Amino acid sequence: MNADGDEKIVWYIDKGNIFGAAPFFDRQPIKNMCNALVATEDCEVYTFSRSCFNDEIVGNHPEIVSNLIESMAYKIFLAVNRGGDLASLPSRVCKVLLYVIQRQSDSGASKGNKVSSEGISQQELAVILGVHRVTLNNAIVQLKREGIIEHISKRSLVINDIKQLVEYARQ
Image (cartoon, rainbow, N blue to C red; front, side):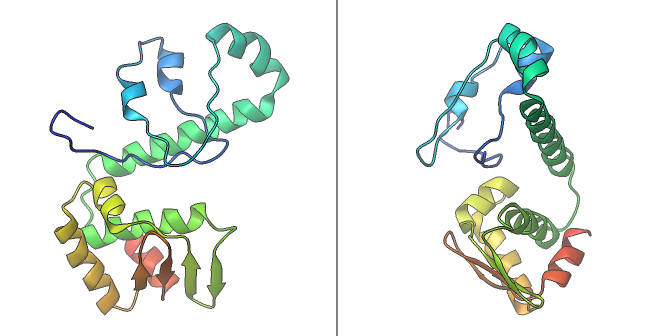
């Protein structure tokens, strides 16, 4: 959140994910990271010193190292797709919705080309995409008109045409 009270949601960190690793590896101080993290539900957070990581975790817990690599790869994906994304807003919306669906693939349901999963609020989606909610709503209306999206809310996301959503996301 900046001085004007505007927030920027980068993404949500799921159970088992690692965050705050970049300063650990590049040996730079963490700047305001603690002020930027907000838990939306009860969670446990663990911290490790550099020596603990190098001496204990690397050799004895390869699954943690693998998780770290996956987490950092995802953050690179986010940075690459956010920085200079010249795609249309409907395409960018589809990219995020596709990720929401993929992230929740175990809890979602599909019936042919129709997919349902836990949702994301339009306000959260607007903040993630860095657009005003009204602007986002125009893109959602377009996607609904084209029959791609049926419903989007915090509680549920219903995609009528997953193939078309994927096609839009690739634009």
